[in-house]
Image (cartoon, rainbow, N blue to C red):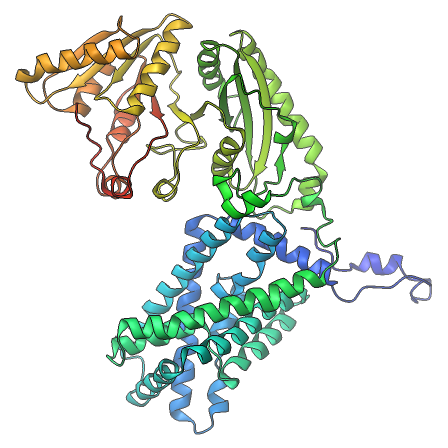
Length: 602
């Protein structure tokens, strides 16, 4: 968002030759509530598009910084007789956090909520953001508390005072904790609003210091400080885990959240005018629908990107649509060619190429809007160059452009909204994805793919000699359908491979391949039964004579893949042929998603 502060030149333009403001002109000295809200929303847009790693480690640093507040407050309370002296140093940890730009949970009761209220981000996205920040804060605070408890940082007197401070919080009734925490949440979220209204660091520092000084003086509770105190007290055996977290931290968490959201975010939102978001970034954008706002990707999309030309697209329910997300139209023509062959094998086949442009999350989006038409025009020009590839295959062509900081996530939002029959995308360095599954690791625990996915590691994508290893399953079935379509649309030979543990099982392997080939209408495929029991070595050996290896997606659970190298990654690194990963939506239990072995019964 452009900086709306008055510049020296704007002041000169509004003055007479004598330096007196012109009649009817007012030189602004502070931001209006609409301008403050605009700055908050622009910052929230940066935050919700940050990666999990960025958010988590920023939150971890903030949680550890809170330890400073607990440290100096307890230490000073032990050496002074006047509580006011100890309270004077209480805001130190919060100053580190806010001035340093770290992620603190109670700060996030304002910016991401404002983005959600404007229907630019969904409730699931808000809850995801909150969860990452809260976990990071708690882990950082917990580490700091354990360091204080066992590191010999406190003097014996300070340790006694620290225990007393924590005991005081534990002994406070839950309803009092809640309301005291609500006022603290109000203060913190109010600091965020004032922080965005301030125009210089000294003003911000003063606001932060005075506001957080009110927490110890008012005997209020902040959830991250309370968590740190609870861990410290648990470490000293002064309270049980359930009483410490359930009876102390939980009421404070609820109070901070409700205080921050209701007393500040909503009130400040409704004190702004309808012009609060009449800024370039959000001109002519389609807000999330009510279902999208509540359900996120389940109902369509969870976030409004900077540029999205999808509104120009009309869905034909009778077509077979292949969606092709690409990052560089000049270098991913083979991917479009593969999609065109698959589309041309069906009646009314259509290829929808979406150009996904990665935007810097710190981009000044007003300036980006000035170039909106230019960016869209350049993208369309690049896409025109590949339209002929689709035309040559007698398939229909359509295209869209997305500019967003979250390039990969936009693909799933886009697929959920448009409901294609298949997504074909690149896999590898400088591509939109580089994993052995179509989903990101965390997402695969909760999400279900919106359609069939083919993810290609492009080494020319020569389809003339395809090797398809299989032990059955829906993902291998998708690979078989894809191979059959390639045979129908051009010269392509197919070899099926299955691996058994010993020569005695060869006959069973041959029978399996015969039945499987007949079921999937690829009876003319060559059958190969390997009796070594080594799947990886068998694939590498047979792939030497192939131009493409087509694999069903790994069924290994997330934790299993983290503890051992996935077969798919080994194959990709060791064969010279292109590798295509096929994944079809199907139900898997949470146990299978976490620790599934990846083996199927033949």
